Amino acid sequence: TSGLDSQAAYIVMKAVAMIAKSGRTVICTIYQPSTEVFGFFDQLILLKRGGNLVYFGPTDQVRDYFAKIHPMPHLITTEYNVAEFALDTITLCQNLENSAYGDLSSLTLESGNENVLLENLFTETTLYENGMTKIEELAAYPCKLHRLYDGNNKPSFFRRSGFIVERWLTSYWRLPSLNLIRIYAALSIGVACGLLLLGTGTPTSQSELQSFLGLIFLQSLFFGVVNSIAPLQAHIKERNVFYREQHSNMYPVVSYVVGSALAEIPYVLLSSTLLYTIFYFMIGLKESTEAFLVGLVLYNLYILVNTYFGHVLTSGLTTLPSAVLGATAAAALWGLFSGFMINIEQMPDYFSWAVNISPTYYYMDGLVATQLFCSCEIDPVPLPILTCNGGLNCSDVCDFNKSDGCHMIRIAVSVINGTSPPAVALIPTTIWQLVKEAWGFDYQPEKDMYCLAIIAIALKVADFLLLTFMVKAKR
Image (cartoon, rainbow, N blue to C red; front, side, top):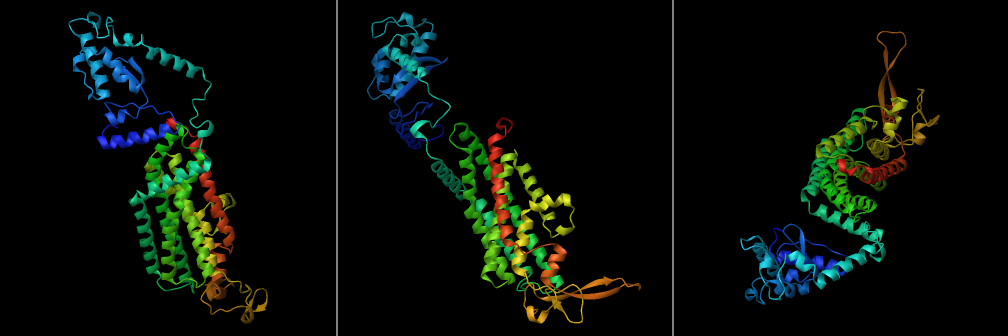
């Protein structure tokens, strides 16, 4: 209760007393409590300077005991605060011990016994004998002192997880800066990206396609980094609390990890849905409820993966700067292997693992496919009449006027026929065919969702392992 006023100290100690009444043992060190606060205690251990025991017993016998040994009984009043009375008695006795008059053996107390040192006097009382007997009985009891919740007092896993989730939600709610950073970032990135391609809809040319893919890549990269970095400071502070509580067996690691994961979901859903909705309707993307919802699920999973990666960084790294550096480095690598900068089909086989663990790739692959997928493909061999899907008449199976991935464009390719310079031919293709050939994306939104969900779960498992097995003493 240091630094608290009397009312605040009373509230704190009342809460501690309620914990003690629930069947738990509470040990407190307190300096000069008020009469009301002192009344909460059942037992008292009182030490004088030097660590010598001068009282050990019930609090309701403190006044009677020290009244018998007080050097100046005429100063005793019933209005005296019990705690201050005991401390003043000890101080007076110590002053007499250290005074020029010699020790307390030169005085005769009200009890009629020759006075000795306080600690020696206490050892001759029945309070001391009763206390030592109780200690011997407890010492012989085969209890597991390292377990706080043995027996019937142990709460269930779900109850502890509920408490920790509630603590996480309360902590996040009390950090308006963290929540506002996410909201401001979602608004600013969503509006800025929407204005760049305002009302353009899905791409209908090669240049529009490049702009569309670049904008998807940048907005996902920027907001992903924001969500990786934003919760770092809060998690580093909570990590210190976790180490303390886990050392006391109050926080199971699984409950802590599950709680932090669940507490993030509402904030991620709010911010990422806000950005995605602004971005989607400002550009005027595909007017399909299914396409909108599939893209929204992909985006929420992608941002959740970035957020959980920030959790892993705070569990595995020691300082905030190192965690920020790790978040930005990972975002750069994920962007490199996202399929936007380098066609994934042209990457060496020994880098295929990097594509498989890149959440940016799964998000872009799923979103681009939901917006631009077209089942109609123009046959690659030029014929006098265009054929699609293996020799079928394109007019029978395709609608090239639709403003989606079926829109037909012509791309220029060099034809080597022995002339100099080489001839240039315009080859017809669809937007979706160009996406597949130039970037390597494919239509597999369900697989993309599953992969993002698996990565998110894997990150929380890694978070659990780091918190469980890393040496805390080196932090």
